Image 1: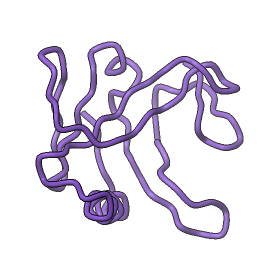
Image 2: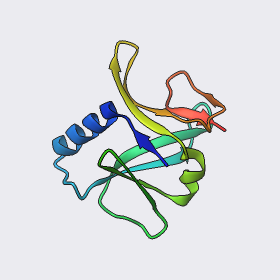
Image 3: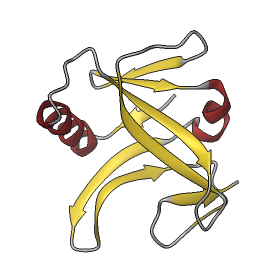
Image 4: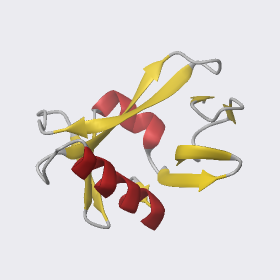
Length: 108
């Protein structure tokens, strides 16, 4: 399961409206190779549900995850920070053995 904090939910809803997207656009989270730690998170909106997608819902936000990424993301919480130490979405991932300084890549 992937969870969403209240701050992340609020920001996702604002971004969806600003981008002119509808409630049919779900949040897609995936993991790709790259970054200084080897793996990177990818976050975006998608109105297509693929047959192999796993679908999670938390706080009214539907999250789509492909099967390959699911292994890396189980138990992850999506948060949003707008503080002085950084602004943006943060992945709190219990599967990550290390993360880079910017928080955008990780290793398992």
